[in-house]
Image 1 (cartoon, one colour):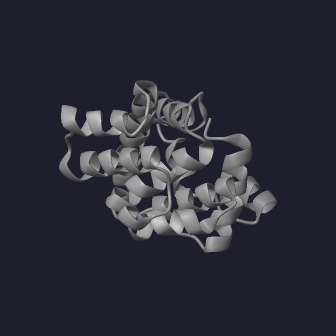
Image 2 (cartoon, rainbow, N blue to C red):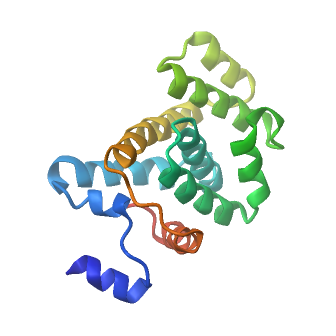
Image 3 (cartoon, helix red, strand yellow):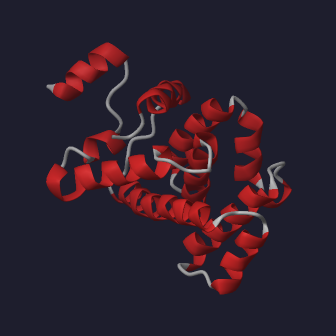
Length: 178
């Protein structure tokens, strides 16, 4: 009934990503939702746009269409600039972003692809001007989206229209994930 009410008021069905948090909320739903909210909206030196871009980039590394579209839409709205998001997703090496973010995304990409990083990878990020707290924040996003991407693909999350993702992005920017 709740899902029907949400569709009635929003004009869009509740995304599968939101539905999954209702399944066994004490086991998966609430912990995952709270962790994701803290990672993407909690205190951080990273902006919301940067954190959402990290989520989109990690999702792209995992070829998770639902999450790429969802978090690209949120990052684009947060930055008010689709070019940055499009450039990062097309080719991180040539994207017009600052060195700290590029170094961090490079590390997150390696962790996502290879399932490990080493001291030299972390040192490269620190040398680019990223604080150890920012690295910790980025790794939390990486963890959250490596889990979420796998769930999205395992459960075959429905990929709605770009217009639906834009509406969802507005909601997520206003209310977050909790």
